[in-house]
Amino acid sequence: MPQKTIYFAHPMCDYGTEREAKIIKFLEAEGYHVVNPADHQQAYDDWLESPAFTGERMKFWTNMAMSCDECAFIAFADDLNAEGVPHGYHGFRDSTGFEFGTSPCHRIGAGVWKEVDTIFDAGKPVFFVQDSTNSIFLMGVAADDWATANGFTKLTVDETRALLRASGTYKK
Image (tube, rainbow, N blue to C red):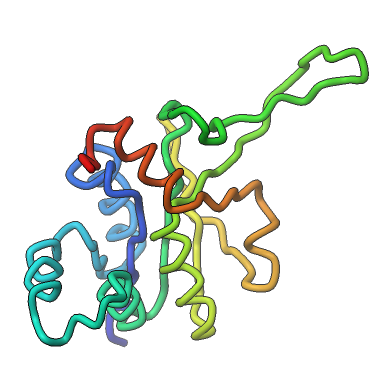
């Protein structure tokens, strides 16, 4: 049986990082051939200058994602913050305003969201990669409720860029 390919949708600020390497190693150990968009940046830059570019920048990445059997994605790191962008955790407050706990708010950048939506529209399996210091696991996500389940928060393009600027990745 041929090895399945999995598209690894993740924020640009994780390109070339230890976090990215750790997750790719995990996915490979699970038996996948990983298609990492970070490895295709030059091809993307060339495509932007070619006659094939029609003005829709995400088309390059969604086509690449569609060429894969499955998709795995991650959220922005919880400790990365920028003004006007939801924080990585939301506290629970009682009626007096006392905060007694936190819940993850998995912030998904606009580009990653588009890639994942495209894969869902094709009916292919999608997994959220939950990573922490000590463990990594894949959580299957259902297409019909992924936007509202599991604490996922869709970021706007401006919010995504703000986090990338805060990380030093986006210079504009």
